[in-house]
Amino acid sequence: MWQTIGQPQALALLKHSPQTGSLARAYLFVGAPHIGKMTLALDLARTVNCQGSEPPCGQCQSCKRITDGKHTDIRIISLNSAKDSGDTKARVEISIDDIRELQHNASLPPFEGKYKVFIIDGAEYLSTEAANCLLKTIEEPPPQVIILLLTTEEPRLLPTVVSRCQRIELKPLPSAEIEKMLLESYGIDCDKARLLARLSHGCFGWALSVSIDDSYLAQRNQRLTEMFSLLTAGWEERFNYAAKLANDRKSAEEIIKLWLGWWRDVMLTKCGCKQAVTNIDYTPVLEKWDEVLSLSEVRDFIDSLQKSLNQIAINANLRLVFEILMLNIPRKERAPGQATSPVPIN
Image 1 (cartoon, rainbow, N blue to C red):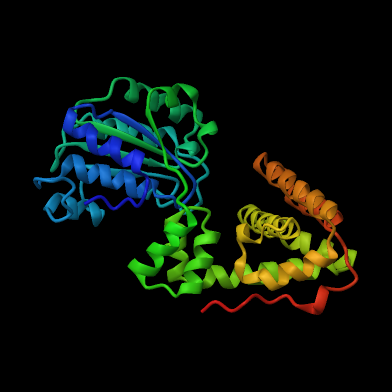
Image 2: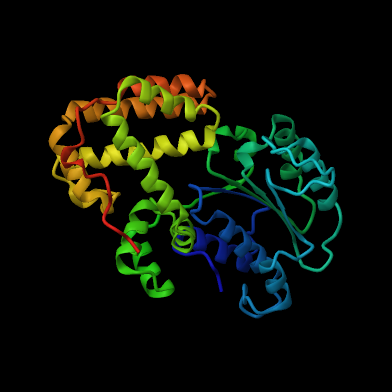
């Protein structure tokens, strides 16, 4: 049984290929974070190595070992791959040594399965040398070897690598479908399921992980509350906030994306499109800020947020990025009604 949810076009292709002998030797799975690329990759690995009559059965020894991460013929390569060197420093790229090790393992026959499957998770992090080295293997793959590249940022891959893979794009799921699955299959509370479905932007894996761990929602509320306070804050407080975020690029990007979603919701509220709002637990707050923010203020700050994301993507100075944002964020004397808390979601 395939574990991938939705993605009918991708599943139709991958289910049909092994049966007709048209299985590609290299695939490129493209999609947003948490949309199901790894789930689909493991589904394919189980399918080509399944010992049952209707692969992937999920019950045979091979399927179970792949699910448990113990199958010797399934290798996952990523920035978090364990290294024998004992170096605990965070990696910023997948190196040529990783690919040379892949090539060596690929040259050996499968040990316990039918196919060796190599999954490169975060293929956009391949160094140029690693990507060129991998290209040789993709062009002339050894028998019984399948290489799966997973990426959220396809433009960062070498065009020559992309051209030699069968490309499969995973599409966002409708929020109504995600909400229904959270309700019926996982017993999530109705209000919470509806909120997570909206916040997930079509990525079921994200919604499911946040439903298990409420820390994201708590952090989100804190970050939005901080943003509300900045709207009425003086310059000193604003620049102190910018300094606090100057050393963590990942958090800075997450905050700007969160703000971008909220300001988009203000714009939708002002334009009478409340049914499309993402932060539905903040509906009363959105309506209050709608009354004091002009459409031009909202539009201009959305432009500023988008420019900030683009600057972070090219490694601009974080403190400078946030200081410019602090200059551009609209300033109000006080919050409307002093209401900054969302509707509680338990």
